[in-house]
Image 1 (cartoon, rainbow, N blue to C red):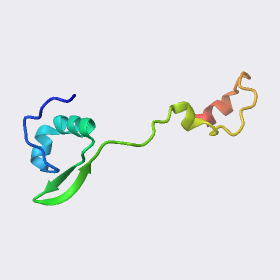
Image 2: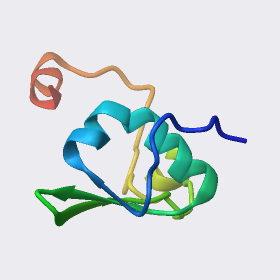
Image 3: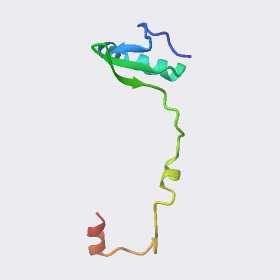
Image 4: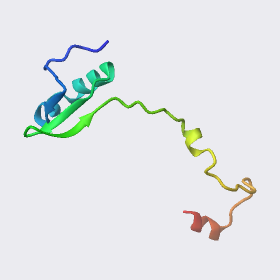
Length: 85
């Protein structure tokens, strides 16, 4: 599990407390899934919550992005090389 925090973190925390204990707060949010609201002078400004989206591999993200790839082994001439940079 996660290490006990040296500060008492409720659902809200001030920016100064967050700055001093960010890694501990990240670990807590990751372990418990409970979001934490960061306040500035008592006004909610940000929320830290666990990412729940799907993890997609680089290969999957790039799938279909190459429209046409003709003659990949052919040498490239000087003019084309300069244009591709």
